[in-house]
Length: 401
Image 1 (cartoon, rainbow, N blue to C red):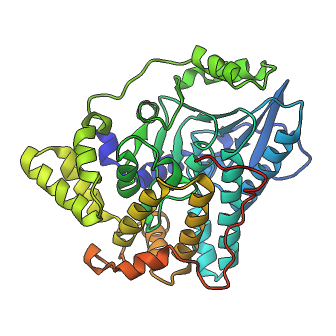
Image 2 (cartoon, rainbow, N blue to C red):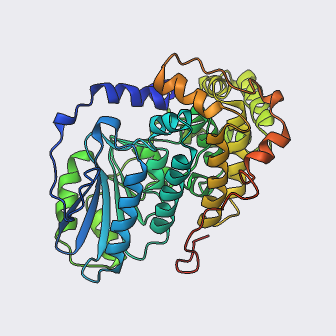
Image 3 (cartoon, helix red, strand yellow):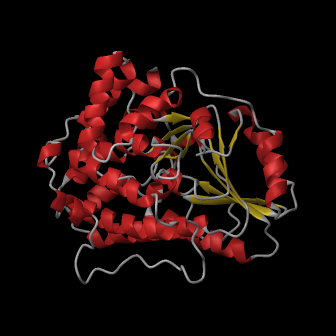
């Protein structure tokens, strides 16, 4: 199947190449703020945040995270606003964090700017995950990395026939962050481990089937869905649910989907270590000669060995943590990842896939047997004794388990 052969970042590059800013209409801001990277649409009893950086597939930067936090807090406190929506401009919902900007900041020694990015984005994600009003995310097009973070913790997620989801961080020497260790770890069986380690993609139908999406509608229906929601005067979760269900389409994954081989997936990815997962896949490949085992093994040998071990532990810990605990841990991990203290895999991964595009990352360590337990343990530790932890408003906003 094509989606199993095409990497998440290869897909992003193709779409970026075809994307031009002239394709998109500007929208009227409901605020006097001059930041046009998050637009606002509003009618009647709702507000919609529009992620608006179409030339880079609406990749998130620090100012976008800050604007989202500002808007959402304002709307939550406004009794005249019943519910909130989010969508993306153009061909994507959101391709994740702006990793190229992070790459440049690291090379320029601006680590504090990187910290501010993660702190700002993770704080917004916590706000979304504890939001008191109904929230609808329209996941049309590319929804990857941080794009999942600014949507999946909310109440409703509408996938479409154009949705492409992934947590592709192991391909760039990083770890699934932005709350991914929380929501991936709560998927059925060991689907979360599979997605985290392989960086493979899911379709909208697959997102619905495994619970990442709450609804599925053909993308052609989105204008009708939006118009219907804009005309609602409600803050009732059940009313929003019924409205989305009115436009829902019945769909199921095709027979080539990874969700059709959950028995094998769970058997292989349920092991305690990455080495055992690979051994199990190799054993299954020998027994069945199935192309899925071979392609999955190929991907695991391509991505960062350090990222594999770090990501597996992150998902396993996330299964027993609340959203705020996951975000706090991910913040420590992200600072380690961009600092280069343990490894420069993040810089090398972004360079190879998004900057120089030679697709030949030189991982350090280069193999799983060179990744020590001490390295993994350090990845989960604060950057230094004096490094502040991520501060989230947990006393004001109770996290969900």
